Length: 123
Image (cartoon, rainbow, N blue to C red; front, side, top):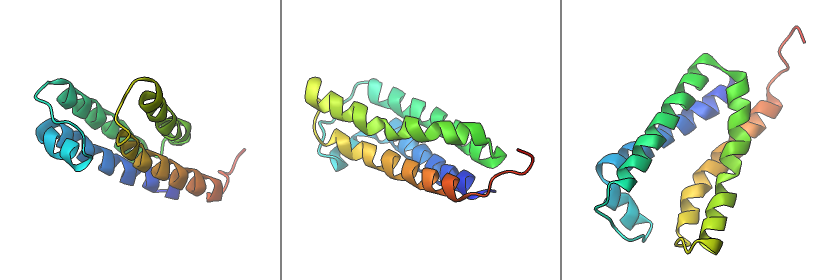
């Protein structure tokens, strides 16, 4: 497994844990971030979607899907931008930004690993 793939594997494991937590104990997660608890199903749906995204990340890491790994970087980096806009323009609680920090940090790790990876032969 390449270093960039390994970074996505670790992120996929993190995201799967977040997804499972949001599906099965969502209010524990919400309380950790000082956000209002809910009994609505939307938070569990968000968890399910996070788990589905984690499966893609894990598959891409295991298969070393270089294109997917590279594409994941800007998508994960922009999460903090969108969450910031939600806080500024849509009255989302500022604690929402804490959810974006791991995405940002893992994306930077993947970017560094990709830049340090040797160029594939045959190009």
